[in-house]
Image (tube, rainbow over all chains, first blue to last red; front, side):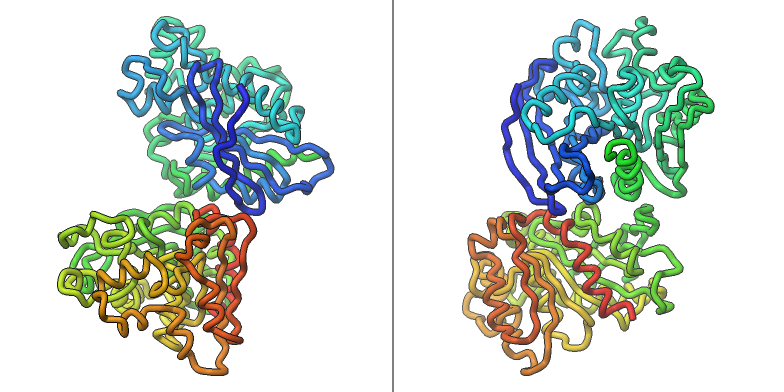
Length: 286
Length: 286
């Protein structure tokens, strides 16, 4: 459904809109942020390209606009940035608030199939279909033909899988410290067991970037930019496994950069936000 | 006392150090952040100039490094940034946690004189004497002769008053939405009544930027950069009164910019952080 604009906040010459709407995918109210660069924009298109930023575990759509510092770079390139939430909230699913890495704040950008979760936990459809549909309907200044996707940690998993499952729909993909092979890490195994059931391994593979990239058209390039910090404890614990994704992608052009001494926090995201927005701009702003 | 380094976080090529030490001024443990740009630094000095950022009501030293976006500009100019806390914490003063605008998180950068507060609430001495003394002792790479001061809201009041009370000690001053005339606004009146007593109006004036600037040496310039958002509700409510400061400063060179549509938040600070760090760099980096 249409968005209610709860607030407009001036930022870097553009505007951060705090939005809320009732979602048919999650059957809950969903809050998000939309950053609009100042107009006229700095590139030749008459509409504004869109970069979707998917956040990680425990986050809402508020954390990244406050701490990620994509906005000054979005202004430079004339790109809008959408910051959705990471799960339904207040869906009244039993146990949804019991874990920080499953349920609320941890929707994993999938459509759940298990009885308990499937009525509300449909973040894949929400992000990939409902949200853009409503955004382009209400904000006609946005260019529905120029959409890129990025994200952090669980949101990096979301960005990679949503991009790979929809060839041609998104013009560019990047990720900050993504969960790159969830079927082989504790976070992913916990989430997919819960949302799909332990036995439903076919469904697991459908939302695993490393599995998906194997069937990405052979010989076709996949120019993705991925940054991972070498001091990232979750990387060290084997939750991210970007090396598996890189290996599965073979020679397709995936760029994984290991950033010396960086951790998993927004201090890491903000430090490389300029590189990522600039990377997307190559595909979105021409 | 010496700082314990609790964490080192990579950020924008530099390092954010999370520090903690026992303070003789406040008789409590004080936490703060110190951002060090990468070495070698980008200007000719062999030591790193320092910019002190004083935060506003309710904040700790953590908010601005996460949300204020000074660091990339500090890297650009080769400046270190210090983010102290805004009050003692856990001093066990009766009622210290009862108000968001007085007591904890609201030290107002004064040395209290009233019985209840004077043992611990000595943020003026802490910021102006103890903290720099300890910093320059432990971090020899910092340049004790090149220090600038800035801040937000209550911290803007702190920056202006500390600068004005110590001619020559700080090379530059700026402020984001400062409480510019506390003796004439509700926040300041509440704080000064509590810390100095209602009758002690002489002491009040000693910590009022608008009063202090009147006795700033006549004909001497005071190049201060002040930004205030026109959509700042605290400005509209008369808590900031930058116009009083500007008027009292006369033709001394104070620059007050009213930024159209900006509010009081870190979205405002981050948007103009580059201008402020660049302003200080003119005085600190040569």
